[in-house]
Amino acid sequence: MTFLRMEEQDLANKRVLIREDLNVPIKDGAVANDTRIRAALPTIKLALASAKQVIVMCHLGRPVEGVQITEQPEFSLAPVAKHLSKLLETEVSLIADYLENPVALENLTGLILLENVRVNTGEKANADELAERYGKLCDVFVMDAFGTAHRAQASTHGVAKFADVACAGPLLAKELDALEKSLTNPERPMLAIVGGAKVSSKLEVLNTLSKKVDQLIVGGGIANTFLLAAGYPVGNSLCEPDLVDTARQLLDSTNIPLPTDVVVAKEFSENATPITKPVTDVADDEMILDIGPDSSANLASLINDMKTIIWNGPVGVFEFEQFAGGTKRIAQAVAANQGFSIAGGGETIAAIDEFQVTSEISYISTGGGAFLEYVQGIELPAVQVLKERGR
Ligand code: AMP
Image (cartoon, rainbow, N blue to C red; front, side, top):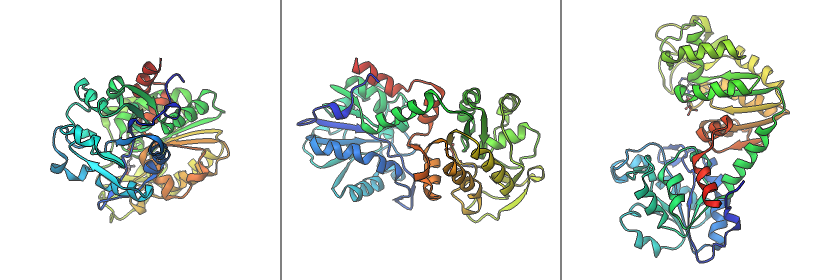
């Protein structure tokens, strides 16, 4: 690929700004899953070993833009700074006023973490004014956040236009290399498993993938829309009735096995009582929160026959133990598969980690949306700009 790489740059005496994807789940003020943080460590360590100053920037969740982090502390990167400091065994300074007071930043040593970039006005709109200010914080900008490479935002795309040097970090480059290798000539049969809650965003992805793969498994909220399209009652389940036509077309054109049994509850809660029942029997006041044991056994045997598997998104609310069975069975089946398996997305890697099958999946990508867009063949804007700068 035709972009500059961080490993090839002389970082001595340089101020290096790295965009990482440290958007991790936070529970009770602490990092609940640190897979993304651990994935970024080699890049950060490499930069710390030679650069004059290393500044890391990233986002966390979806705070309100233009509102100070002190007004919405639940989106602060404080837990990430603490965790990073523990893993690196070094002090991490979390800085909030880096735009107002960039000169103060210049005098800091050690690792610097900038507060959530998504509170900065212009971040989402990729405003040049903000991007230029990010660019001025460094001599070398390193884009290493594969998970946000599909978004043209000031910290992922715009900044690369303004920094003196813009290059790809080792993690981003590794992700791109692995994806390219696995998708150029996939061994068949090929299967995609697409689960999760974001029905509307992923239906487009499903459309494209359905043309590439031999078999498609849908799960989670997405499966509910397909069940509705197939005429099953979905009660109170998360689903998008306005996308039923799209789902119906996909059902007609592609091999999509639907669940035969489901696990339902009357409320969406950690303490909800699970009931396993045939998919035909979902009552008006029930919501489908997982696939049942018959469905997961059928899917596991289908997974067993595949040579290439792409997986994004859980097939149930795996965060609640009583609705984790389906996703666990799928994770185990993908792990046992002898072909090439690639999994991506925050929730998916959290599930894979929880069910302790990480080492048996061929490649784990840290990206969710970016992973899916890459799979579709869409050029990632943050990579595109690196290529332009690399020419
Ligand atoms: P996504 O980020 O789109 O991959 O969605 C992941 C989220 O989908 C997880 O947090 C799951 O709890 C949630 N999810 C999975 N299945 C369901 C379901 N049947 N109903 C509601 N949410 C679900």
